[in-house]
Amino acid sequence: MKLATWNVNSIRARYAVLFAWLARVEPDVLCMQETKVVDDDFPTDEFLRMGYAVAMAGQKTYNGVAIASRLPMSDVRVGLHDETDPKDKRLIRAKIDGVVVYSAYVPNGKSVASPSFREKLRFFTRLRETLERETSPDAPAVVCGDFNVAPDDRDVYDPDALRGHLHFSDAEHAALADLKRFGLVDLFREKHDEGGLYSWWDYRGGGFHRNLGLRIDLLLATRPLAARCSIAEIDVEPRHADKPSDHTPVVATFD
DNA sequence: ATGGTTGTAACACAA
Image (cartoon, rainbow, N blue to C red; front, side):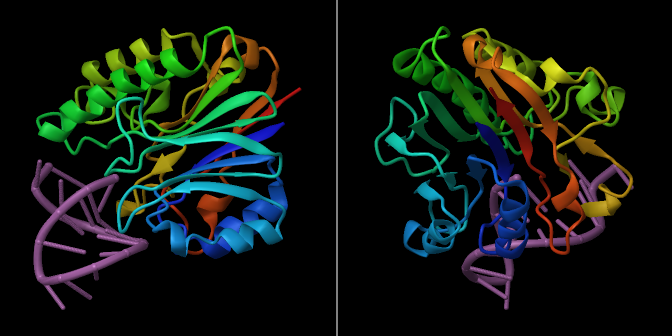
């Protein structure tokens, strides 16, 4: 199974780049975040034409998550364990080929001093609680998404300058570490030790051209699934496109 | 560096 995660930053604005990438890479599963579209306007038919079923939870303007799969999907559920029909659509999951696949969009948090930063930290706790209720560290599961946290110094362009700021604060690192202590492995880090490989670059100031990026899009798998992972990589190609997302896909292959 | 750019939507806000 070939699985990818991509914060598309509006699925309607990304239509051309997204479907060209899908045709080239042919993942079995694509988890998307920030689709920014209500379900009725989601390009379901276009995915179907390419052989993908879709499960989505969208809203107007903000957030929105989805999973596209060319393998059968079942047990689709939306929201954290403590919410039904959440206002902010940030989590969806489905069972695909025996694997519980989550597509998650962790709150940005705005700044470390913002009230929404507290909500961001709380989201990690609630996500772990959701995993505890729905799966097990001994079962195949993967949490894919935009975590809005860069795990360590290798994952940011200037650790000394960014330490303590949004995406790279002690509180966010503790929140991510606590989530991973459920029994999750960062698949990209299982395969690559080097720094300077990012999944997001700011649109502003030529961030991509200067490689001033962050690795904040992660595939966090339980150990039994991680043991089946043969490849995990960041595909930077669609970030070069005309009208790119500010994020680029992360892709993993399982035996 | 409190700037800069993009998307949605509306002349602001989130990222």
